[in-house]
Amino acid sequence: MIKISAVVSAYNEEKNIADCLESLEWADEIIVVDNTSSDKTVQIAKKYTSKIFSRVNNQMLNINKNFGFTKAKGEWIINLDADERVSPELKKEILRNFSSDNNFSAFKTARKNILFNKWIQHGIWWPDYQIRLFRKSKGKFNCLHVHEKLTVIGEIGQLDNPLIHYNYRSVSQFIKKMNDIYTDNEAENFLNSGKQIHWFDAIRMPANDFLANFFSRESYKDGLHGLVLSLLQSFYAFLVFCKVWEKQKFWEYQNKEFLVEVGQEFKKFNSDLGYWKRRTKLKGFFKNLLGR
Image (cartoon, rainbow, N blue to C red; front, side):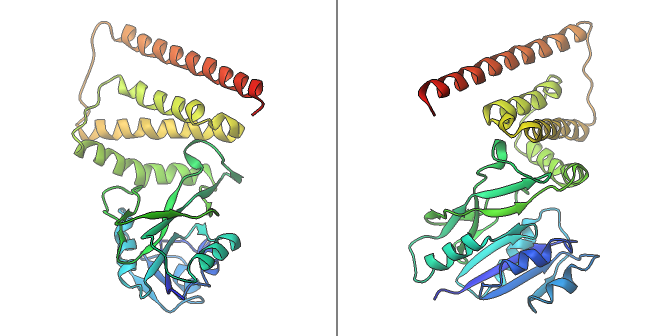
């Protein structure tokens, strides 16, 4: 049987860590990297493993994950965040696949995101494929972006059963992470890419994000949850614009026709909104016509 090490990096996760580690008890070893938690994360983790390492909390979350990978003794690593769970079905599938060796360097799996007490089945939230199982010698994070995927050398297989992700449980949690971690990193990467922002991006960036999520990625099929999440994602894009603008010392733009220009931007958004509404209705019409 191939040896599998479980690696979890956590910061102040006393509400999540027990359920996460319980879902990993089948692994050959469990490694916890604690990012100097101030709650009972370490105390709870000690019930499941003695292999606990303390590291300074880093907003580039993947640095400490990479550190955890170096401590693993197994040939393969399964890497989870504290708010993720391996379901019984996924556990059985993994153990079945690893009864003997295989030719893959890693496996990806869909991630079932639970947001605001509901499984979100559209938008950016599903299937949300993640690489969480990989050969120790073949995978690591490049540590350039907090939302980056694991870099893998070699072929990647796919598992049928999803991970369970108890994502945002409150609006406050969503906004705090968006403001304190994600948009800062996003703005920094935007600037490093050499891209430029213009005044009209204060409208276009959130507007385009809303249209893409709510219509193109069909978040409307998740009802009120889909609408709220699409609006929150558009606010995410607006915050990125604001933080890039801030880092550029709040440059000014103003002219006599500014109100007219703003009106033209909203007119364009209204036109795009009309297009997506018509397209969505036609898509539904043809699906009904074809019986699927």
